[in-house]
Amino acid sequence: MNMILLSGGSGTRLWPLSTARRSKQFIRLFHDEAGRPVSMLQQVWRRLGSRGLHQSAVIATSGNQRETIREQLGCEADLVLEPEKRDTFAAILLSVAYLCSHRGVSREEPIVVLPVDGRTEDSFYDRLLQLPETLASSGANLALMGVRPDFPSQKYGYMVPEGDGGADAALPIRAFHEKPSKADAVRYIEQGALWNCGVFCFRAGYLLDRLKAMGLPEAYEELLLSYDRIESRSFDYAVVEREKRIVALAYEGPWKDLGTWCTLTEEMNRPLIGPGYIGEECDNVHVLNELEVPAVVLGLSDVVVAASPEGILVTHKESSSRLKEALDRMGRTGTGETRASSERTVDSSAFPDGTSVMTRRLHLEAGEELVTAPSADVRRIVSWTVLHGRCRLFQNGRELPAAVGRSVVLGEEDSARLKALDPIDLIEIITECHT
Image (cartoon, rainbow, N blue to C red; front, top):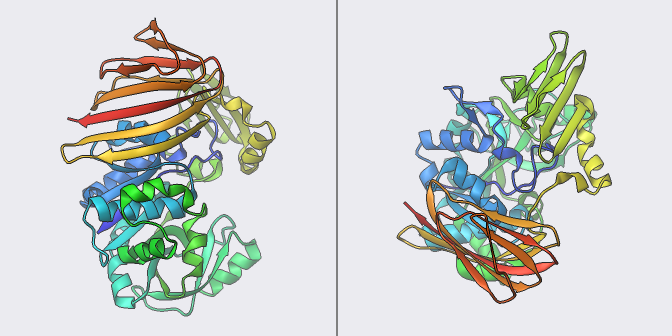
């Protein structure tokens, strides 16, 4: 079974721990059996690995999350890097092209798409293994996994089946409803509705035909060059909600989308992460502190305190849903990120000997920085060429001449920092040799 793991989001609903460079699936908020901190991505990868599924999986992500994934999963994870963010429809199309062009996946082979930011149990993955058979036996174009609701949530999408079948029946879907009112959610559940958890299965040829219909190439390298021609929208809207031959397989166990501080803290097995103290009189308080100074909470209830170098959040749990609005109002000026204002992957290639090469065109505003450092898991060579603008360049703490047209090559043992003095454009080439 071939799999596409979606890991390209940059959710701000968990700011300040979640940022564009480190989305929520990378935050180590949980602990494994040995008590070691792990992220949602690591949990999913471990569960796939225990079933031998990770070897047939690719991870669809953006270039600025590449290093984080390598650090958490190692070099065995196969990445499909989006040239630019264009939502899940484009990311899945590109991943299918990669699987067919580089993995030799045929048109008739099933592909399962799985987000990496859900919280569930092992039984969920056992059920997931049944999706390809559900697709084949039903004759549908799409087979979804649906979670049997245990309460009328207003935060999830619902899919309403034509009727009620047995436990393993493929249920034809007649309607989708996104984040309904509580009254409507109750009504949908009475009609046998399932939560849409974003897991679905299709044959590779189903999406290759989509590419052909849109006048886009099926070959991965050619599609990379045409990526900006793919409409920017979600796969749910572009495909799922418009497909007539669609069925769902019900999952009866626990599942939760950890997209807000409320849902996330409900799943944490420790109320305090990082230096700090929570008073004994506090009730339902969680502290997540990545700073070196302690955070102390006294006499409060139903509160989240989250602190990182990007900022500090103190919120009542019921008010945490307004975080995105607050960040929009302040223009996210408090995020403090030093990253490229815009970046576009020009080329991304992988070779049989394990070498991969990615070429990006970057734009930095004055004051922004690029940083690179040695990796323990991979031999990496980085090349920077300034196309326009002024900058200062430091290699291993020593300043180097930097001018338009000049290139600097950074070896596998080098650390470097490039700071833009003016708005600048540059080309970055990253060559990785997996050892």
